[in-house]
Image (tube, rainbow, N blue to C red):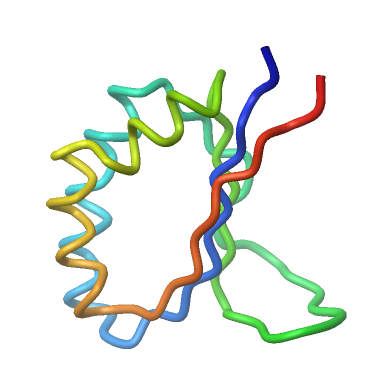
Length: 96
């Protein structure tokens, strides 16, 4: 079964309020076995629209990644992110 990757492109609009998200979200990620592969860091933007913060999170399966996103823990954290950042988020299934 292929792994899945949660990819987020984020522009934080209120850094103080965003800390509420960064404090709440780890509970969901830990519960569903998430492994952060990239979080912030240097970016070389080459094409298309961009956000200054880029995150890649690995999950063992697509089902785990989707369960994490839809979990009560993440949905609660998301309420904090929505008021403090603009985000494009996708979950991509990896190759076998």
